[in-house]
Length: 320
Image (cartoon, rainbow, N blue to C red; front, side, top):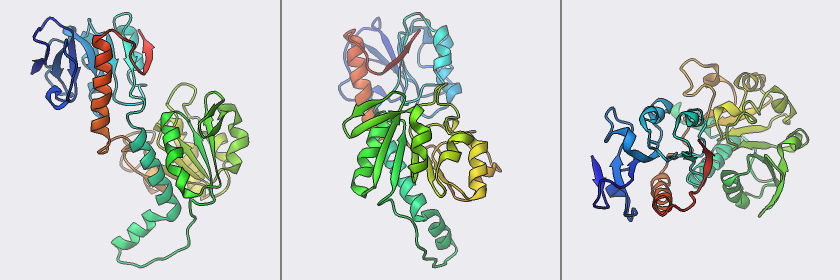
């Protein structure tokens, strides 16, 4: 059901995937409706002016109402990546703004990147299997201390990853982004520098958005430049890595990997990645954690306050 927090049903309509009564201090002057991807729409989609996309419901659900949203002015994602929504933008009313959720998942995704790195280096998956078998199997494993870490994709998530690496006594942390610049923690190298940087990295963490430029960025040539025994950690998108090329490196035993995202995704039963040696896989859980909901509510409060006052929105990535 829709909830009119303004007292007038004629005011701009907002579709939220979180029940509006559960978000404190929503701005007045708007009408609110709750839709989290269910089969029935809460109102006529043509009335919706601000559409916040349901979280973790898949592309088919996300785009289902868009063809009927003739009055939409803002499409707000709750993810950093919006590659599933961008193809729909040309069919939306001229001037519609597509916003991502930059910053929303920084803490949770960075935390998982560190978890995957530590678990893979210290052999936690093998210890869990040994525990399941009731076997005591001590072994010497590499530490994160004294390792060189290369972060590919130094946006807000990449910076949050480095913040969490800081106490672990890494030998160095090297940063790569689309364009060179100087960040708070030091220089950021351009993607063009990767061939020179990859051979020195013990751990390569991918946190870049999936764009035409980054699709299959970690291809056979990229992986071949990594040093023997290096670890590839992917908390970006599965399509940033060439799965076939990665499989070849894993099966040879030259590289190891820790993947929160895969291509294809979800990874189907029987896919060779499941049983590849030296790989740790989690099911795209970088964002969904207890950190998600309070940050999502704060983002929506801020964006809607800007929307109702006709102020510039945050995180506009494209305009129809």
